[in-house]
Image (cartoon, rainbow, N blue to C red; front, top):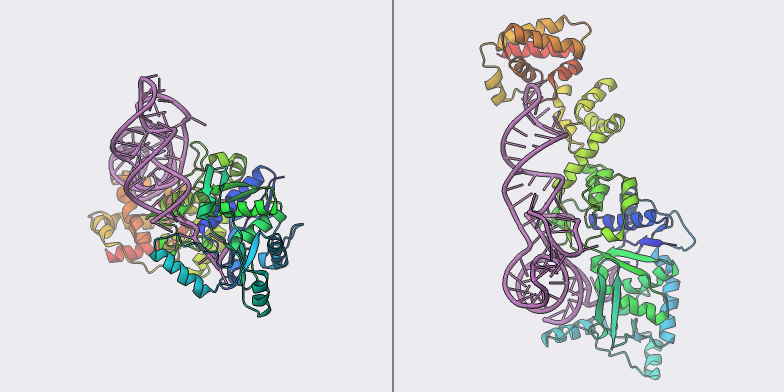
Length: 476
RNA sequence: GGCCCCAUUGUCUAACGGUUAGGACGCGGCCCUCUCAAGGCCGAGGCGAGGGUUCGAUUCCCUCUGGGGCUACCA
């Protein structure tokens, strides 16, 4: 049974990198009919917050990444909040101590910092020096009895090597001597990441650990822990990092970094899913994938080794692609609140027609507001450059006046009836169609670019069209 | 500093010793066209450097360079 997990720490919103890790795990599980587990690694009590926890749920929900086991959902391997597993972590840490594979360490943070500084000054690796590695039983008892704060350190085998057989990178070998006796249980009694991760992954019967590249260097420590316990290793797969434009790790500096911010910016979750799926993964020449296709095609074989730069332009393109494919109803639902917020309530049918005519023109949902302004407000200015070109012509007045009269006579005021009015007028005046349409466009919208004229005229309706033409004629 | 990972156009990627190095975003041009989009077509642009191995290297090996990660009582 394939069991994978996404194990974020609730110290901030779900960011792009985390979302991609979650997605790959989710796709891997769905593709193989396995289980996708969500585990919240909240053992850093300083930085973990409830808001961040909620934000992660929110982000995953927005993306449509659901979990088979985890907070709220439950499952047979709970609890799924790491801090609620504290007794388990302490029990296993104690087991290692009892077996002599871990030991109490009473060195204070200040002492460690001092020694680290000294080591660095000597150009040595800043490893734990093993002060507490060999304390006598009496010494130990005395320290404990005195209530001296302590941590538990893993007694790391100082020789030999530890190999990670990574599904993405192949075999990576580390010399144990470059590792040190790392802390597994902090002085507050909480486990460290490397320890909790191993205990929980084992207890939750995780079969594949799919996570960011930044954990590759931690993996030998974890493997040594598995070995100390005599537990079977899961398979490991390390995904390449996602970088910003400057090739540095993606961070706040690079703009929107939390996935949910993209929601507010007007990105569609399906576009985001598609985009991040292509960051570090590919399937031939295909660029646009439905969720079903991603599940069908996803494989660790398609995962690349090199880091990927987050490219907003391509995300935008994909977003446009998905907006085009949206059901008109859904596009409207996304646009409606923005339009109401900007222009107040208008007739529902009218708003729907306006939104529909911009479906091919939107890249981001909020663009609807600016693009459609003249459909909701009458007091617009004429674009000066366009006015110079289309109003300051000998024919402008005649064109607009004639248009006004003929359109006023139309019944019904529909696109099919509107079109001939323009074409006939152009023919009569021996003008190109554009020569008639451009001044009209400017009169009706104040702009040089709008959706096709007959649509605009039809949607605005006879009354508004008449009034705006009058206003333009007066302004000529 | 030590250890580890990575390296194809500006960006995401395909290629798994022999290809005119393919696709996509972006960029430029053209077509369509009432404008703007959408759509279609075309174009510019790449194997980081140096050594090997081989009949032949983008591909395999080494060195360098560049970027990233780990080296915490953060995950």
